[in-house]
Length: 296
Image 1 (spheres, rainbow, N blue to C red):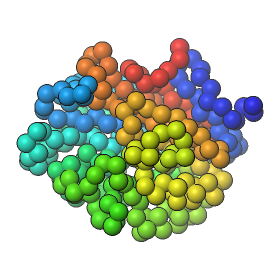
Image 2: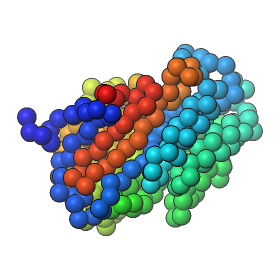
Image 3: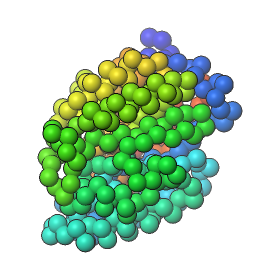
């Protein structure tokens, strides 16, 4: 087995070996480093099915404190930032969102968001986007791209129904997620326009439906998206949320890493977040904290 064809565990984290290790050498003299969280599901409600909704606030504070000590370029959350109460009251849900967003924005640097299905459980996308903030041109958008340290970061939104209408106020089923044609056209144009840069894809629902993961967790037209990505020579990884236990797969040189959900388990015994470092040779180190897998 060649060096590029395996997931190598090293002290302090997971090394995702690059398919094209030369890509970053001329792009950045310093590794790209960013913090990553997903599936906080914060709400002021009692725990259910090992989901400790209230505890996510303390877990997020710990993650942000670590991020602020770690010389990071940005932080990104991969969706399901908030949840809702049993009453499904939008006003209360907005309060939960404002509370967890304020904690997340305690990071002293840029913070980016990926939309998850629970972010629209009783809210509209516009309400979620209005109560959160992305830097610069990404603000107010559910799919967008930005460049940092020579890496093109592409954020996707799969929160659409089969008729390509937006998820809004619970008008969806969590097992049905689509990327609409207009977003696919944008993605293809974005990939072509940034062909000279290595890329990382961020999404909430999973794209690796070809793996051993349940199709219910994946984007329904994931095959179309993956086919588009595999025609590109410079996709380093797809970073995902949604599946709380976490997951890893690889195909055609593209690595698919799913970060475990922050919501699972009581605080302080449990938490889940990570620091990602993209090195000049194209390898990606993911240092996990809490329940996120790491070898020391």
